[in-house]
Length: 160
Ligand SMILES: CCCCCCCCCCCCCC(=O)SCCNC(=O)CCNC(=O)[C@H](O)C(C)(C)COP(=O)(O)OP(=O)(O)OC[C@H]1O[C@@H](n2cnc3c(N)ncnc32)[C@H](O)[C@@H]1OP(=O)(O)O
Image (tube, rainbow, N blue to C red; front, side, top):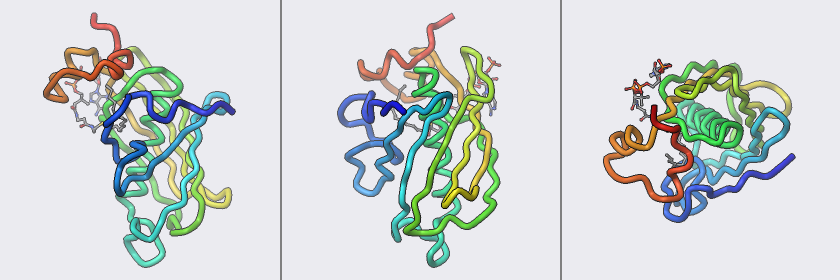
């Protein structure tokens, strides 16, 4: 198991899932374990939908972040989420540790499709497939509406 750099995008990156400084975010950190990225996270009461159960949209946000980090940690690229297909098999309990795992199902230089599994106590709560578009620097800058900060540039694909 190898810990991934928790902040490869430099200071001030604003991500809800992984910014270490986000006031209400998940503050996720990841490790690489073989062909997977892995994270562990215990949802607090601020993430409830129904009492005692994590909001389904936030469970999906967690899956999105695990998949995004599979692209970062396994492909050394940054992907923009293009498609999310998930099933929520069981309620995600507040106060119980979640294990999140992401692996590459298929990829090209332009897209990556990631398999994600979120479980509590070894039982699957969410499984899904998410597809990411991997853009070159110019396309990423058009999408973001401004220049990519220096630390982000190496995660773009080469322009063709
Ligand atoms: C840069 C580093 C920043 C890091 C900082 C933050 C830290 C971490 C944050 C982590 C945050 C978590 C992450 C987030 O929250 S990312 C934020 C949430 N996502 C978005 O806002 C994306 C919104 N959508 C778009 O902007 C466009 O639709 C995109 C960019 C996705 C595609 O636009 P467009 O289509 O114009 O681009 P293209 O023509 O170059 O196509 C490119 C390839 O993509 C393929 N494709 C497209 N759509 C789909 C689809 N639905 N299923 C399957 N494939 C699809 C397409 O066929 C082509 O492949 P190919 O045919 O060439 O093979």
